[in-house]
Amino acid sequence: MIITTRKIEVYEINEIFEIDKKEFEPMNYPLFVLKQYYDLFSELFLVAENENKDILGYIIGGTNNSEGWILSLATKSEYRGHGIGTKLCKSLLNLINIDCILLTVHPDNSGAIHIYEKLGFKTSARKENYYGDHSPRNIMKLDNTHK
Ligand SMILES: CC(C)(COP(=O)(O)OP(=O)(O)OC[C@H]1O[C@@H](n2cnc3c(N)ncnc32)[C@H](O)[C@@H]1OP(=O)(O)O)[C@@H](O)C(=O)NCCC(=O)NCCS
View 1 (spheres, rainbow, N blue to C red):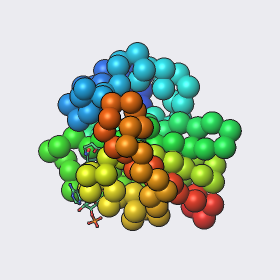
View 2 (view 1 turned 90 degrees about the horizontal axis):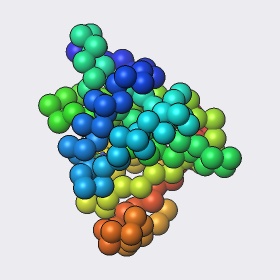
View 3 (view 1 turned 120 degrees about the vertical axis):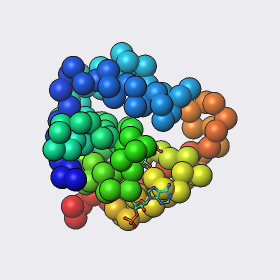
View 4 (view 1 turned 180 degrees about the vertical axis):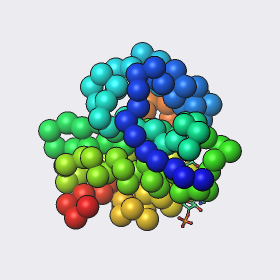
């Protein structure tokens, strides 16, 4: 399978909504929030696709003046273990010209943590109620200087 990553097209946001919902419900992003991420950070909203142009996964990035964030990442369950999550992360990190990249991840999400650690992220804090729903999150941080 040849996997490529590229910027999302606006008409593909509904498909991302479905993937995000399947993976993260009830804390999935509403459709309008995905569209607004696209409005703000369309260069950092990427999809992975195969030769048939099927969408296999996505990543959403965002930035402010001093920080870049990985805001969401998912690979469709049937395509996992092919390096897609890693490829999406690397593609995004190459596009963010900010030294400090942050993300949150559930402490039990060993698969995602494995990817982030391989890319150089380190856990900088654990917050017990980061999103206000009483579920914990690790904050992970990458020094993106040497990308
Ligand atoms: C996390 C996720 C994006 C990984 O996607 P993927 O395309 O399977 O990732 P990769 O194929 O690039 O895997 C990279 C590495 O992680 C490992 N890995 C993947 N899932 C794993 C799991 N559940 N447990 C342990 N290791 C795992 C792979 O073996 C691989 O290791 P290696 O490179 O040392 O061989 C995917 O499992 C997913 O969508 N999960 C649900 C949504 C989610 O949790 N997103 C992250 C929120 S912070």
